[in-house]
Length: 158
Image (cartoon, rainbow, N blue to C red; front, side, top):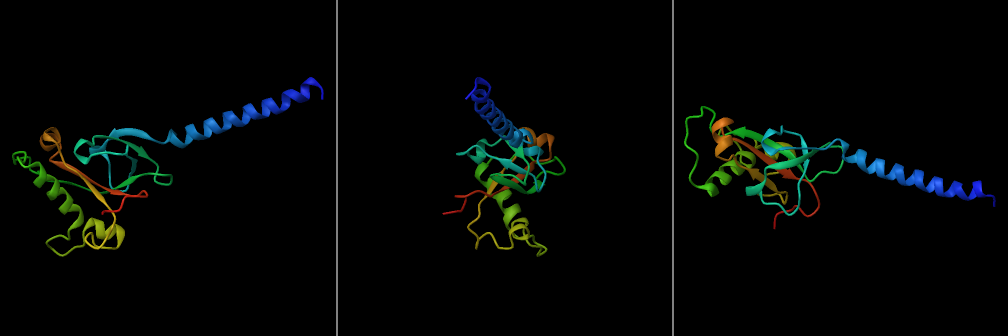
């Protein structure tokens, strides 16, 4: 084997390595770290696991066609007129946000959860993560909240 033929497999290996690295980089190219409160219904995110919804602020927005751990199920506001005081009870605030995403409306419309999954929350094993507003978003963004529907393996409620 002449020296030029020995170099060929090395060059081919390096080319494959570069292609693999670029492919991995391009798969993450569409991702962007954003505030969870800036997301819209239908957008997809990757969450760092384990996570606590009380500490959830920045998430990695990714294309829904690729792998993702959650998608935005519902967004809403709890203080549309900006005339309410920030709730003193954090647990009740989270329960109110969860209810807005998984309970039917008082007018009888199905919940955002049921509209998206085709099943009621109580009969489902799928998990919803309520992201409640903090004091800043309560005052500046009308108490905007976001509900994430977990999509990955191991996301069922126990």
